[in-house]
Image (tube, rainbow, N blue to C red):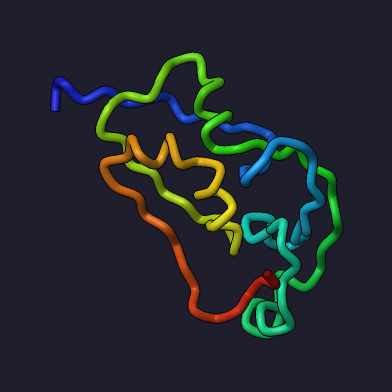
Length: 118
């Protein structure tokens, strides 16, 4: 365990996707961790009623590769990537192929219910 290095956690005010730019995000007012660039479905609101109240906000969008490339310290080998992206996984993967290729493992949360459109 002595030779393990841990990066200090960081928080960035941006969304991750397949390109750079800006995008509108559906911000869930009573449960912001379930906010998504994709519109939630009626089923989402039925299963998770705390997602019904939402507002559209404009956010900066970048790719995983660009976000990681701009870190002050490069990623160390044998990285673990965990994604909980509220239906936007395919687009994050598209913009993160270089970073994902460096991962020893990747954990992606999925839900088999259609909670978001698209």
